[in-house]
Amino acid sequence: MKYTIDIQATATYADKYNEPCDCIYCQNYEMMFSTVYPEVVKILHGFGIPLRRPLEVVDCFWNDTRDRRRYESFYSVKGELFEDKLEIYKKDAIITLYRPDTNAHIYINTGMESPYFILAISNIELPWVMSENPDD
Ligand SMILES: [Zn+2]
View 1 (cartoon, rainbow, N blue to C red):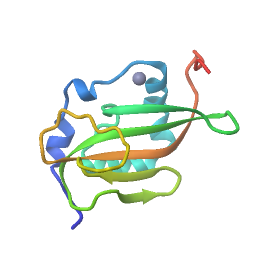
View 2 (cartoon, helix red, strand yellow):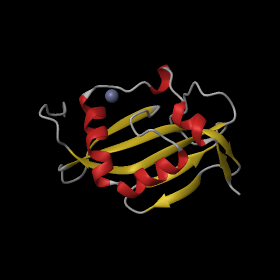
View 3 (spheres, helix red, strand yellow):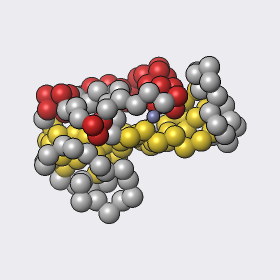
């Protein structure tokens, strides 16, 4: 067993750290993520994670061909992780679990009380569907 999860506590966790953000980058993420990454959404459901309540969504500019927007996102999971930097999914996007005491440079601010760990999704690429364009 590499981790334990309290699905109910993860699903109901809500405070200022994971308040939904309504900027165009986060709206685009929320709108397109389920369509592009249905398998990842299933995994998030298994953890009890609400897609629209990330700790942070990082917009990482355009991909090389400038037709998709790159993102990373971070979620708080109630439970205990016994192995740091545990990669649980790697296909198009990558899901990695981090202990709160990780030495990795990731977004780690959460209001969740111990025990908890961070689920990070990297390598995300989403089409831009907002009417307003990104600044760059
Ligand atoms: Zn935002």
